[in-house]
Every structure is written in structure tokens, then in C-alpha cells.
Length: 119
Image 1 (cartoon, rainbow, N blue to C red):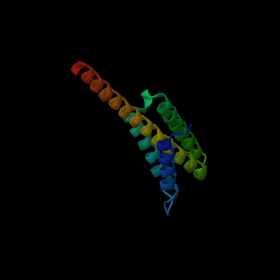
Image 2: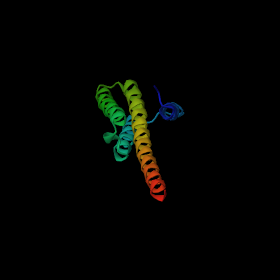
Image 3: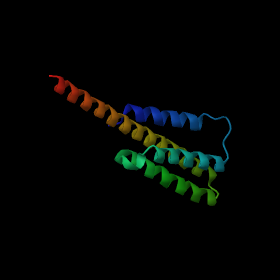
Image 4: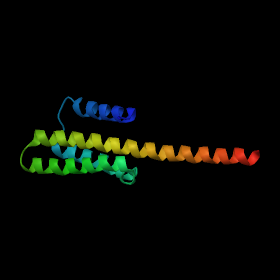
């Protein structure tokens, strides 16, 4: 089942990646993909199973893109970098969602405990 937030994140990443009038240099695209992956790690994606899967995919796609760039296959490499950015964005979104859900659950538990105490 696809989560609506994931659909939005992937659609936005694809629009941003494909919407530029000029193509960025491969080094800039690699840097952007690596920054997105780093942001996902900072968001705690490695600790959330679904997010960790997308983070791992992003890292694999960056590694593949680097090999393709070394082989002179710039266009294919760029597609893998776009996918890496999208997977990193999904990983970040999933990590944020998990943190927010945990915070909401904690608040709900506290409110319930306080309500029971007042009775």
C-alpha cells in the first residue's frame, strides 16, 4: 500500500529533477544526491525499517551512478542520481513521520494517564 506522503514526495522530486531547463553538471547532481542522503541519515532514516530501505537504495544508486560516470555514461548516471534523490527524500519523509507519530503517541498516553488520574 502506497502512503500518500510518499507519492507526494516522489512526485515533487521527479518534478524538480525533470523541471530544470538546463541539465546540471554530473558533479552537482552527485553532490545533490549525496546531500539528500545525508539529510535522510540526519533525520534518523537508518533507524526506521522502511526509511532505511529507501536510504539503502539511494546509497546503492549513487554508487552505481559513480561507476556509470567513470564509464562515460552520463545520461544513465543522471537517472540513477535522480532516483537516489527521490529515495533519499522518501527516507527523510518516513523518518519525520515516524518521529511525529511517536511524539503524538507519547502525548496521547500522557493525556490518557492524566485523565485516569483525575477520575
